[in-house]
Image (tube, rainbow, N blue to C red; front, side, top):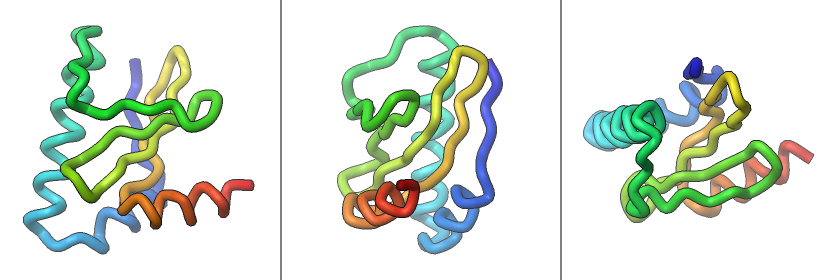
Length: 92
């Protein structure tokens, strides 16, 4: 399994303060390790939004969007619930 990060993910991550960025990166690291071990705990709040588009929680306020196929997980955006809704509308 490959893991990649879109430019939109990096742009959205930069909007958070440094401590929040560290927490988001730590959550991503735990998520990637759980996927690799094929043992995903319920605490990630994993939600399927569209075919191949998923969301996990990073704390109470942040959501991380990613596309998942058999070969790759591609992280595309991080933001609040409302920011994620706006981002999803931009995909239409």
